[in-house]
Each structure stands twice: as C-alpha cells, then as structure tokens.
Image 1 (cartoon, rainbow, N blue to C red):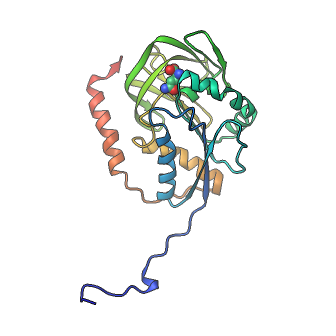
Image 2 (tube, helix red, strand yellow; image 1 turned 90 degrees about the horizontal axis):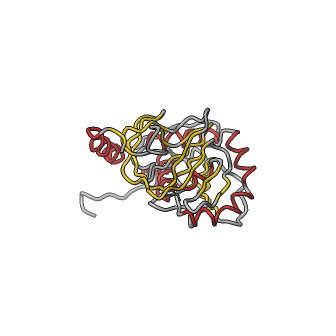
Length: 262
Ligand code: GLN
C-alpha cells in the first residue's frame, strides 16, 4: 500500500443519515397524460425529497388500478384531448376521493390537460363536453388557435417560468384565485392576465417545461405540505440549487425585457 492509500475502517465510512420519513406521491395517468416532459415533475419531487432527507415512494396510477393506501401528494400532467377522453372513466371512479383530499389540504399539482379536468368542464374544439371534477372553479373551451410559447409569471411562491402549449382557453369563476399573473405569455386565455388556478393546496397550471425543476420554490412548497402530512413536520435539508436557479434566471432575463402578454 502506498503512502497515499490507507485502509478504511468500517467506522470511517459515513453511514447514510436515517430517513426523515416516507412521502408517498401518486402520479395520475403517466401513460395517457404526461406530455411535454411533465414526468419530470415527479422525478424532480422524488429527487428533492431525497436531497431533503426523506424517502420518496412514487405510485404510478393507471386507469383501473386500486388507489394506494398512503398518499401525501398527487400529480397530473398534460395530454392530448384524446388522452383526456381515455382517463375520464377512471377519474370518475376517484372523483369523490380526490375532492375530499383537496378539501382536506392534500397538495396537488395538475398541469394543462389534467388542470382542465380538475375544473368544471372542458369543451373540446369539436364540441365534445368532458365533465371535470370541479375542484377548481374553471371552465375551458378548445379553440382553433393554440397558445404556444415561453411564460413568465408572478405567483405567491415568487416568479415562475415555464412553457405553454394548449388550445383550451380557460376562464376562472368569480371567486377562483389564479395560480399567477402573466408577465409574459398567454396564460389561461390570453385576455385577462391570469394563469392557472389555486384552491386549498391544489395548483392548476398550463406550464410545462416541466415546471418544477426550474422553479424549486414551487417544488419545495409542495414538498413542505406533503412532508408535514406524512410526518407532522418538514425539516429541509441542504439542497444545491445552482443549476435550477441558473435555468430559472436565464428565462427570467430572456423574457423580462419583452415583458407583455402575447
Ligand atoms: N388538450 C388540451 C389543450 O390543448 C391540453 C393540452 C396539454 O395538456 N398540453 O388545450
């Protein structure tokens, strides 16, 4: 053995810190509803939970599958109108459960197509009416013209960046809070300056990207609520967000001078 090397005694190896607890995530319909990289939201939450010292357990929920016993956070992504039609029946099976969990403060993140289905209704461009869960007081109508491009928002968790691609134009009910205010992009409908919707701890948004990796404050807001439900507390760990902050800031810098809605 050279002078540079030494034997490592078992007690020199840092043992992994004990987990702060299991946090269970349900990803709704990852096959039918997960376009434009929205699966990255689930991966981001699972990775950040680990970095914070928790054990992440991800349940992919497919149509017809039973609901897992333990759930602390629910995620859903975007999809084609046809994907939304395919998950309708299963969503109906779990409608009461999801409404009850939402009322009870379960954190949920619903993007684009699933955001529309968490609203009161989505009427496709062909006139097909898909009833929603009504957890968010929003109504969406499909249009011939799509809203596509980068987005910059101001929200309760700070500036949020992302990318939108939807034909649905969404209108908020009178007392429905938006998720954010549009600084750049179209948002819900390219007219009223709102983006997404938020009720209790349920966040609905059109933002892909996926939204969470470049918006760590939003990811940690969801994680904090989920960890508290799972373990009674959220004790953050040391997370190196250098790349996340760079990605976030690059889009803020790129879009800010152009500020204004499309
Ligand atoms: N079908 C919806 C629309 O185009 C949802 C699109 C999406 O989820 N990206 O409005």
